[in-house]
Amino acid sequence: MTQTKETTSIHEDNAQAARPFPEPPHHIPFAHKYELEQLVKKMKETMEYKSVEGNEMEELIMIDAIQRLGLECYFRDEIFATLEKWSQMGDDSDVLHDVALRFRLLRQAGYDVTAENFGKFKDKDGRYKQELSKDVKGLMSLYEASELRINGDQILDEAADFARNMLMGILRTANKSESVVIRNTLKNPYHKSLPRLTAKNQLHNFEGHVNGLHECLGRPVWVKEMQDLARIDHSLAQIQLQNEICQVSRWWKEVGMGKILEHARNQPIKWHMWSWVALTGPDMADLRTELTKPISFIYVIDDIFDVYGKPDQLALFTDAVKRWEYQNIIGLPDYMKVCLKTLYDTTDEMSHKIFIRHGWNPKQCFQNAWAELCDAFLVEGKWFAKGHLPTTEEYLKNGIVSSGVYVVYVTLFSLLGEAINDHKNMHLLSKSHPQIVHFTGTLLRLWDDLGSAKDEDQEGHDGSFVACYRNEHHGSSDENARECVFKMISNAWKSLNEECLSNSPFSQDFKTAFLNLARMIPIMYNYDDNHRLPNLEKHMKSLLPHE
Image (cartoon, rainbow, N blue to C red; front, side, top):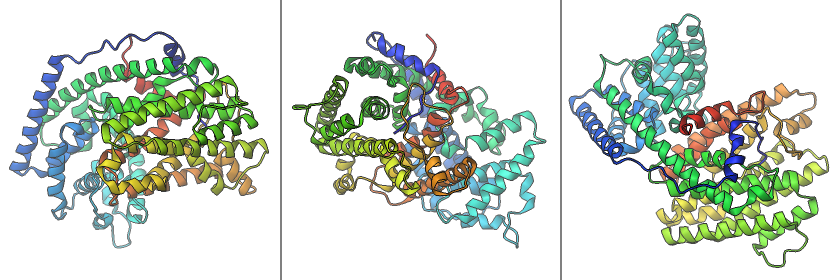
């Protein structure tokens, strides 16, 4: 899992990880809790009233607004009831905005809705009607819906191109407020966004944002109420995140890996952001802090293989992970021994917690996942120590494993109690590579390889998909290779969408976690020319108030 290291304010994790951390001083004020509960109650009453009075499209607009502000956890039952009703209704509307919004909300909730209904917006030649070119809200809704396309959805492939081209043309003459909404839709479509990170940016003009996306009659009272609820929710989330960071940073300081590996990545706060977006429930704080622990080891062990270790030492290290025995480790430097001991202890402790919580011990599954990861790192090391570039197929197959995604899979599977939710799920761990995890790993590996910055403080080299592609396709350029990668990323998203729509044995929390990890990947790997992650920095500054 070769991770590009950035020169960024996030690098201050090194300093934070080194200083003592007091007990988390951040408590959620009772007044905030009470106000939140009252607003949630009021919003639920409004949703029920809209349903009774038959203002059906406003129901869907409310759900869209709730989801964009990351408030879905408070209204799961109400949203389910509304979408269940809509799933049983026919769609005879000829309004593009309404058809696309209904389709998107139902499909992203897992309903099997066909995209063929968009055919009514095509002319006799099979092209989208030109009169739609002036329907700004309809085009934005269509573009958002196209992000839910799966393999074989040609009509949505065409919709994506049509809507994008029309909106780009409209931008040339749009006013300022309209252009802001259009640009945001094109750059950050909801299905690939993380409300946990972006909601605050919408609060200052949320009414304008809602009106820019939808045809709202008048000024709905619920918009102001929802805005107030989102502000409180964001404040509570900030407090919760600060508490979690204190716990993660204390754990990282106690294990001491940052001191032992001076030049390795030492960024527990950044690593925790993966967990923060994956598991969004207010009641999942303990699960998030636990998930950050194996994620941290993925980064550290990657550095050991890519920077620190010698080939013979790395072979011994991998063998020790496979045997899962700390005794009789001979020939390993002290830092490897400490890493192994800490990995064993952390895994044992987590396995015990999961056994207490769910009555099932995942220790053997963890051991298998770590052994598989180290094997993949070892394969990469052997390839590139010999100057060997594998085929793109070989590289990607191994690279998905070395991304660390299967360690994350076993961790999420265990923490969320998937084996207990449905005992039939037990066989999924022996299978090891479910498609939903595979395609998330594909996205991670390909985005990682697209990183434009060089690894800071890392002298190791383990190649990239681009290099393997150019070696395999003689005469091709970097541009050709990158075009191929972007096409593969698009196809991986279609397959990931399909996995989330299928009758999966996994829980909704599990599927949402992997969708959120996929959404987080571009933020974690979108480097600028200064080796920085500006988007991640911006989000973290929003979530972590300056002291």
